Length: 101
Picture 1 (cartoon, rainbow, N blue to C red):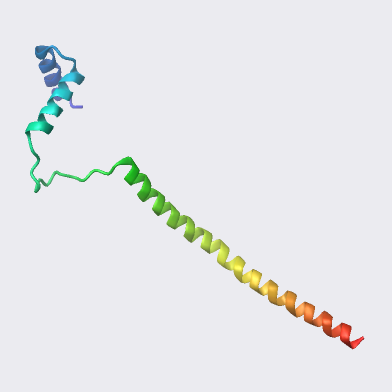
Picture 2 (picture 1 turned 120 degrees about the vertical axis):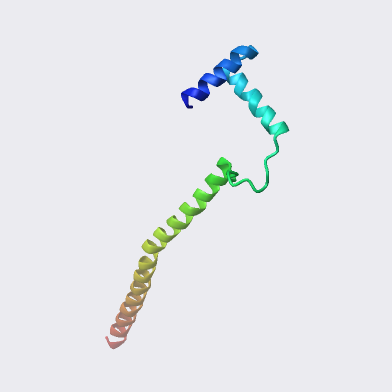
């Protein structure tokens, strides 16, 4: 908090017989109740709740994790398919050898 602002709040709090925190709360209550914010105020920034931020972060991480997992799993699936083909070919060769004997 800027020193000048802190000094002003401290002085007003002293005159009103409140702590600085109580003075800040009183001003906030007054502003919220009596000073409507214009819809076109360029300083109005939509705030996100922690839940919204957590959800967005979770979605982003989930997407990254899915992509990382896919990069690992897809080659493994291809290897599994090749292994299954090799195993099938091997079994067919064994069956042919048995028939020849």
